Length: 334
Ligand code: SF4
Image 1 (cartoon, rainbow, N blue to C red):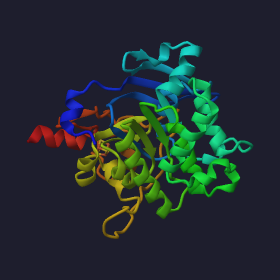
Image 2 (cartoon, helix red, strand yellow):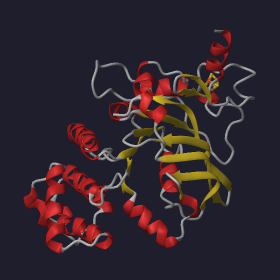
Image 3 (tube, helix red, strand yellow):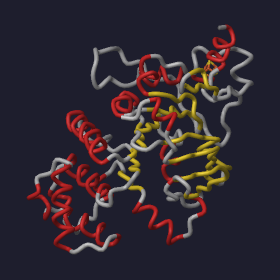
């Protein structure tokens, strides 16, 4: 697992700078992602958390250039080492998507081809991008299935013959087929029951140790994210409100939204506690609230300030970034 010192000393695998994405609708532009910046390092798990519609999946789709109109990237830079992702032509983009990164979505059933066996789906992926014989690819497919905890006898099974957990493992096996440097996992365990969710989370951790890839892990469940991530970015209404090492955020959340989000889900480990939830609903991003976008839902809002002034994302020490007037005032006072 990358430690803080590694993050400081390594070159980033991914650099996202001031990313802006909007969806153009008849009602106006939905500002889905605004000025988001973060780096992701080799062999690191970076987690993105926030409620539905906060922009996390839009970031993943922007990184993979999967956004289609009415979604538009209106600003920013997306670099994969020295590759400028936004400048890739169609052919280089196709190779990039397979060779450098892989994506695991929430619904394995949608990601898998229902008329092909899972073995053949792994073999197809390998043969489309590597000079490898059918026999070699099949033997590698079996190895991958074993690696993700599927009995190799299942190599000739169709997706509908597998359980939900096995299907999700099969999708992870396909993602690993070309040995990518980065795997984007968008709610990979959300559709599964808690026991299978824990098993797959542990397998993802083990696979990362074994293969050394980086992961961008996206979920609305912050307690799950803390289990797997080295660092976390918390998003609210299209913006980062807090970012930093996962354990530090878990033990000492600085932003009121992070605090509420943490209290919205039961922990995977640890004592039972009352779940509080977050009052109200996320804002309309065609016309978001002025000042801090969280202020209509924030019980700590400072009257006269929070509804007028946008809190900047500031570094408060170490690798912790927070966008909240309360934190800024506490820092200034210390
Ligand atoms: Fe709450 Fe104000 Fe901080 Fe926003 S800036 S989270 S409204 S205290």
